[in-house]
Image 1 (spheres, rainbow, N blue to C red):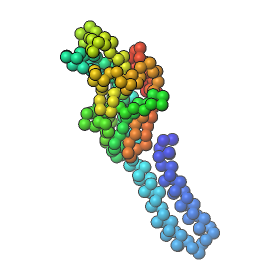
Image 2: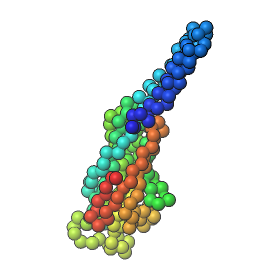
Image 3: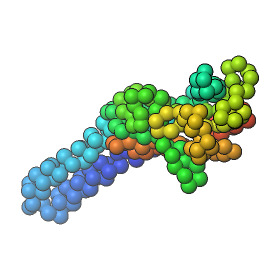
Image 4: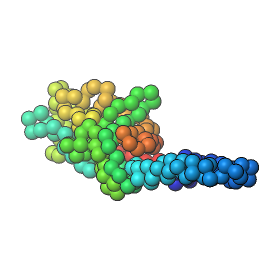
Length: 215
């Protein structure tokens, strides 16, 4: 079905041109050579449309993987989080350019970042390659197992979302972006690109287990 949708315009154009040639043959026999020449020129249009669709990038979400990281430093304190990275695959035959990632909660949409610092905030995903998008992270524990007081706060944020520049620092754990997913059970992940169709999926959040599920 997705393949048919991708090539639908080239198919419709080709059918229209062939239909016109058939009608000219049946009803306008004396003009057949002229119309055939025009039809031959016009037939390059659906071929070009087909080729553009055939070689275009096609983005797809291929699940998510967890990774453990520490937020903070020895001076301000360290909090351990389990982050989830969403895998974005380019199944097309050319690079997807200026790819952007978003997290959508109700009516609010925020940019999130790619895992490779050089690709922030926009990424290029080569053909038949993939990139990972830092989506959200769940608080696990402090490495020492002892709560660390940071600016008079004993409890760190239970769940945080990345920003377009990376994960927030300890001094940035109060803004709305970090509480974007607090108490939220479902949200959306949106990926856009300059030269590829956008993709969007529903994401289920299990804050108790510290997990997400791509629906």
